[in-house]
Image (cartoon, rainbow, N blue to C red; front, side, top):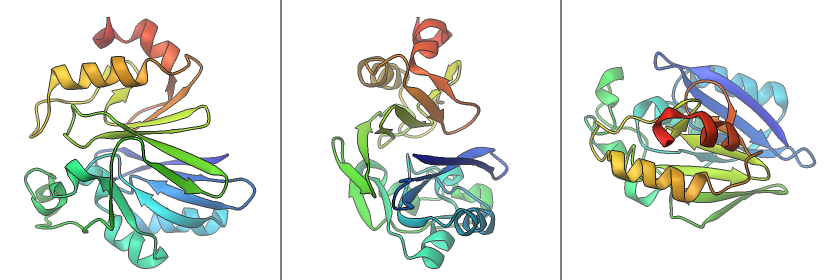
Length: 205
């Protein structure tokens, strides 16, 4: 599996380019800002982007959707519970970048959906708590957790749609049940593993 991470925008969000080694077909996860830098990465690595996938609807993860979709023709996918979040500049936090509306998604996801790119299969895991429609994406031995689980921390729950009880339940019941060697790629910060978070994350004790 081909994987590149790019830190984008003033919120220092992680945008991921993930692709099948054999076919060079892949996905962009969370293009939050700096569309031209993301597109340059795609061109440099010669990846055919099949989908743009958002782990949730906050602007630091969806802010460059429109420009990236226009350039690549790839549809935008987001969980059904966050589909309308992009239309409200206060719940999506779009007002931080001076936008009233963000790009409409092309397809709404639900838990258990499988997103295919080349030989890769990304499984959608519902992880509400940071927002109602937060998802994680599991593929092979890798997990993209968005703003649900970080190295040594968890996502904020004080924004609209957030719930501390929900995020803890999501993490413990849906993520920590994965193999401990699973590599965690979060929406901000460095990577970790399920084992490291299970044993050391102070929010999960």
